[in-house]
Length: 91
Image (cartoon, rainbow, N blue to C red; front, side, top):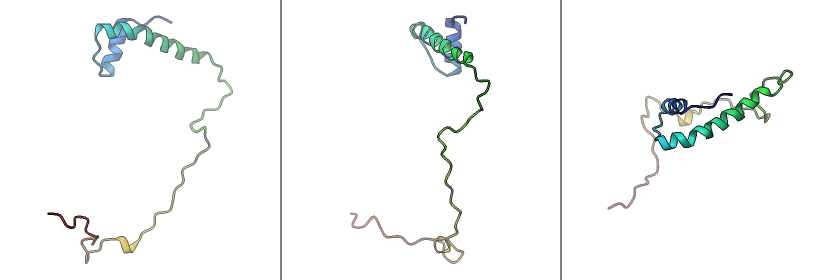
């Protein structure tokens, strides 16, 4: 795989909305190049008989049925809730 150029690193920084100095570009260029080389090795893995997966832990969503609690609803006759005061004895 070809090595990243400083111009490509600057382009990646621009896409990421990062402002990099020339020193930072020089520092990050070999680091990003190594990351890309490592990721490229994944294309060498044989995945011919591997089923695509989106969930590996076996967890499932636990959902509850919606319940309407009439006692907690505002009606046209009651337009507010009465709650205990929390601002007592303020001077």
